[in-house]
Image 1 (cartoon, rainbow, N blue to C red):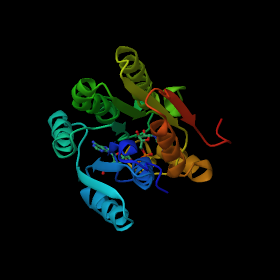
Image 2: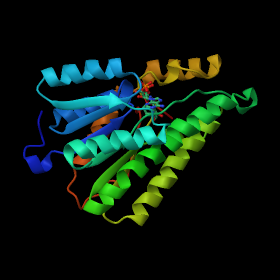
Image 3: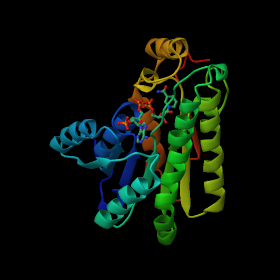
Image 4: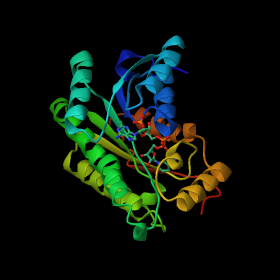
Length: 248
Ligand code: NDP
């Protein structure tokens, strides 16, 4: 599939957290749609494998190490893309972590990690692309939130807080900048590595079981991102919630 049929349709897209799950599926989907995709994450060996696979399939992809909690690193990553390509058309702020646990467990280091990755990381991404997008009067920021940005559940208080915050700041970004498109994509349970790391064993296990039972393939979320990006410049898809049909 190659839908970006003219050079004008071909966008320079950055995807953060592209080493697994929704980020990797989104990178794959957008590369297959004909865009130039720049993959970022910490596990560069994973990125290198995906880059190789997509290049061998004839797609236009590159990757670099990215830790979204490092503001200077995020700026350097984006500046390198600007130096090579002259613009960033789309930033997909996808990197995220979800170590679930009750607040009473006081896993404060993991609260900080969720705030640093899920919230500060998104803000650092926006800070890095915003000046050049405003200069060009054009750009698209896609933030991956969650159904946890729409309702709160036990063991997910801090995770939900970060995702509600992402929705709030996305709306502010949209209102303040009439030249930019801003999209929030909120997935429900989706198969990925999200429940594999950190958190309380019981809470993570319950989320993992639910995901294995009903989770969407990550490609379903990638399709939603692709839909928003594919709209004409005057159409700003602001919010998409995509969840398994059986999810309550
Ligand atoms: P994965 O764990 O599979 O992917 C998370 C990605 O984030 C990885 O590529 C990881 O890369 C990256 N990441 C984590 N920390 C950092 C960091 N400090 N700097 C850069 N990249 C980082 O989970 P998902 O694909 O599920 O998660 C993607 C997004 O989707 C997240 O924002 C998550 O909150 C959201 N989401 C997921 C849902 C689900 O059910 N799966 C539901 C709703 C929302 P690396 O470790 O290599 O740096």
